Image 1 (cartoon, rainbow, N blue to C red):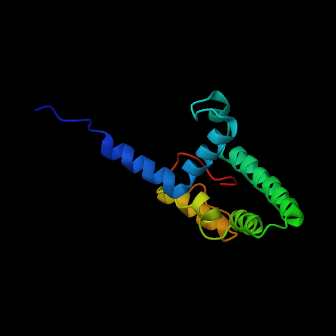
Image 2 (image 1 turned 60 degrees about the horizontal axis):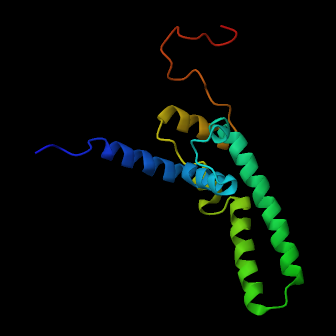
Length: 141
């Protein structure tokens, strides 16, 4: 009997990594916003930083909109719905729980994860660490 698709395990790992790093959330947000697939050249041309900036700009805009709606609402159920939505956005903007942590989770690459850890701790990452001797010379050597 012929075996089925053999790359399923690798694709599943890729999907898990995308989920763990939060990239899928950004991709889905962009896709919903522009009603276009992530294979669209507009999406493909964005860097991760550009995507994050646009995402956070939208979150700030949505927060302001919710605050304005909340100030005008007198209906109890609607007030609760708006407060819940506002709290969720505030969590993302503050970086609570899966907000920022989900977007900047470990990549699985030991060297890149070390650089991210150094940056988060306020240290300059050693971009030469792990390179074979003589591949690149450090400045001033």
